[in-house]
Image 1 (cartoon, rainbow, N blue to C red):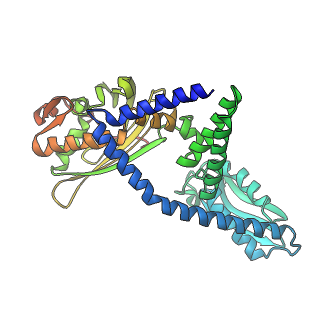
Image 2 (tube, rainbow, N blue to C red; image 1 turned 90 degrees about the vertical axis):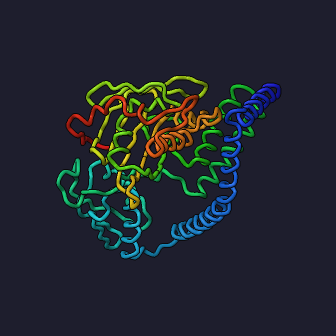
Image 3 (cartoon, rainbow, N blue to C red; image 1 turned 135 degrees about the horizontal axis):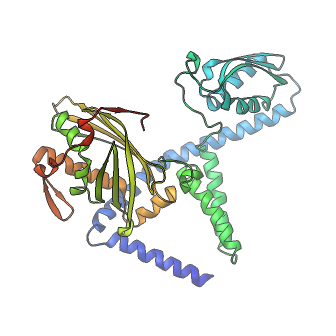
Length: 396
């Protein structure tokens, strides 16, 4: 077992040195690692402070709950209503649509609620200290429809997806202990304990749900990126440059091919870590000339992705471009972190691509990987959607 660990450790050390000392991109990688380390150190104090406060608050809560278990005095109705209302915002998307009344521990619920939120609501309130019984007078709707009180709102998962600092600390401690203990055991116990420990440790460090870490049933939301850039060119020119996505491989280093399939659909081929190619089909979901472009990948794509780009004039007679992108690589966030180890940093790549398109529109030329690109090359072809009706289907 020790020999295998030594081999894996040496392999990891060698891969890390190759990553940082690469003659072409090693300098940028080292600078990025240094910046990330400095950022982590700066955030450490805030993290420790937040965790310590959360732990103290939870200890006080446990003490208070323990005392209440032996307290025979009934809970004041006003206090009970406040406790229930504090829970509503976490489990229903429209807490203002529900009225709560309490009398001698008997709780009455009035108002309107979505059908899928009712079981969690009833279960949560029934288990609260001081609640004797719950009378359900709610008007249950399968969907919001045209009900005024159910418009807008924020969907709630029924349970908190993000862990509190104290929970993350506990999970990280248990995960580390499992990994450490697993290293002292033999196969298959070591694999089971190590996998469970790494899963807990990853969940605690990233504060992301396991489905996002593993890329299971999370559509295109595992990794999200936002970027704003100002380009000294009219909105019309900037919009047309982004709409001609078939030209993207000319200056985007990771793209190998973009082909228009017609009807707002396109086929994309990109180079991933180690030169491995990945392809997917995308469809435009919103297309408003000189204002907005939104897209999403079609079901079954190797890399599920979606994005939205907004264009608006800025105060310098140029264009402000706001970009929001999200994607889920194979194996979810774990796959994303693995790609980072091989030098595939999507955020840095997007920044470099935006600098190139800014240079093309402002200076007329840009340096792309291994070649020089001029603006007249970008004007070849046409954005197919510009000649058709504008799209406005459900957005990203």
